[in-house]
Image 1: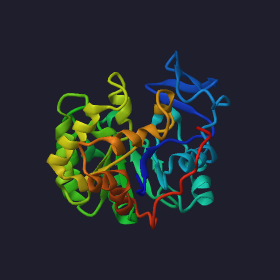
Image 2: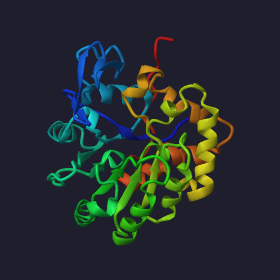
Image 3: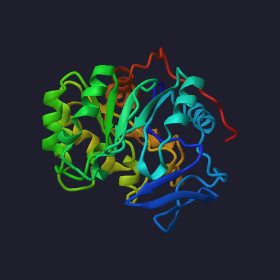
Image 4: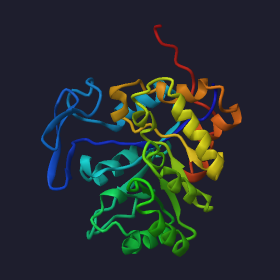
Length: 292
């Protein structure tokens, strides 16, 4: 279908050099990574040099007709602040970027559109203990992206943060970890005016079911019944999910379903994210016919 597409959950790195619980995560070639001592296919094998670059992303976005993307971060990839600033300068109209919040360390705001908090990995899980980063983001006009601990483990403390920073835009990631018990509690937070939900990794969470992911579609309908379709945003979790599906498949299952209206699809795939992240696209990307 013809619509604006905004990917609200993408990762980039020139070199992966991450750390989780004191153990390194790093590329070993062929798209594979050493992940806490185990070999994992972290990205598609065509990324044979382990470089998940902005140029490859833009080419993939053009192919999948994705107008814009929001670059988030994760501890497993290492801090990519410097690389993302360079990418933002190169593609200012196509991407938005997050700096990475490290517990008990300085964080960056200048030049960034948002700040990513890997909340579920924090040693101090009480989000009110991290109030300075939320206040700084609100003062700077940035959004905050959060990947929360499963279920309602952090929803009460985040509710306190929301009350303390009512003008701060927040995007809760991974669709509230929809396949875990209590995920609806995270979705309920989006009844607050400036809190949204993004679906990065949705196809990964329902990967055992696989395409066309009917349970994922039903999860979107359930979330919409809780907070409204105008609070939900599509995200792919590029490039990790591309080890199983193609990039166009991450939107096609939404476009093809009969369980959502065309208006709901357009809102979910791009309309809501245009508003939240401040993109300014006027129409869908052009069609590029392929050899098939």
